[in-house]
Length: 134
Image 1 (cartoon, helix red, strand yellow):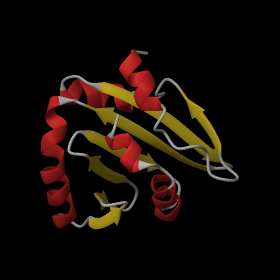
Image 2: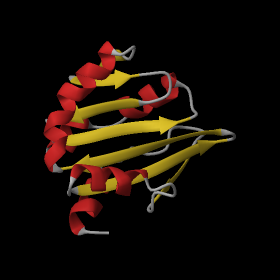
Image 3: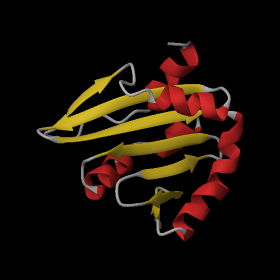
């Protein structure tokens, strides 16, 4: 893991009460695939489990294509997704995922089979202002 990715990983949220957090390698390659798609940058990943429920957070920073993500996320909301504002950051919410761009350069993506309420609470527990300072 690069020093930049390690630093970015400090912004991953702790496990909510009743959940267990695992971090490190992304088992299904989502972060690596996104980095490949976006060109370069730092990434961090953590997964959270509670019984059969699971959710994961992927952070990708300073990848050249991230700056275009804000517009794309606005398009997602036009395709049946719903906008959701968390700590002054616009997220696109669909039935199973939340995605937003912090400070125009850091993608925050939350997926998994957990409820959208659990995923929203996980993002709300993050310090997005600190993340912007990464």
